[in-house]
Amino acid sequence: MAMVSSAHASSLDDQIQRLTADITRHTANVYALEQKLLHPVDTRVVVFLSIKDSDALELDSVELFVNQKPVTAHLYSDKERHSLGQGGIHQLFVGNLSDGPHSLRAVINARGANNRFVRRELVHDFRKESGTLHLQMRLSANAPDYDPDVSFSEWK
Image 1 (cartoon, rainbow, N blue to C red):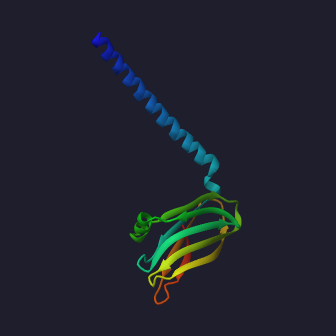
Image 2 (cartoon, one colour):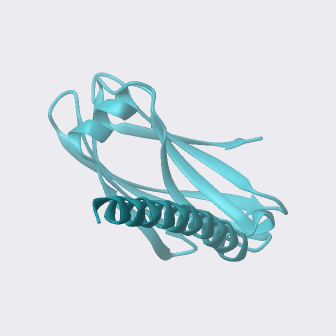
Image 3 (cartoon, one colour):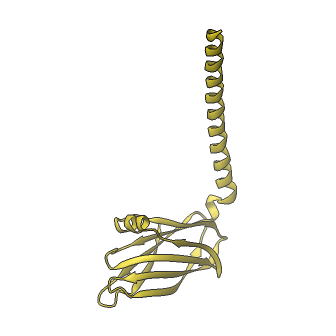
């Protein structure tokens, strides 16, 4: 009887492994289809954030608005701040926009090296053309006031 039970358990393990592989494959297919339908490459816009000098600026949070509509808000943890300070880049937003002129508004809350809290709101106007647009938002702060300075660039 122990032989039958062991063979049955082995058969169940094989079935579970096959089902797990099927689920993994189907999940990947659903994700690929979701990306294709929800974020078509020809209309995609991606916004990244980096920090030039993390010693001069401690990022607290960022809010993004595209064409006056809120699209994302992020509160940074110590681990994320450390990663950004080591040269990391945070993908803030992925969305879709039609070709033409658009506006990106960012609200930044941070603390400068002088321990003064600052809130900055800035607008970046850009033109979306066919294909994926990658925008990098780079934060920096310079002495003596350590006010956040933001620059935008497009990745080619």
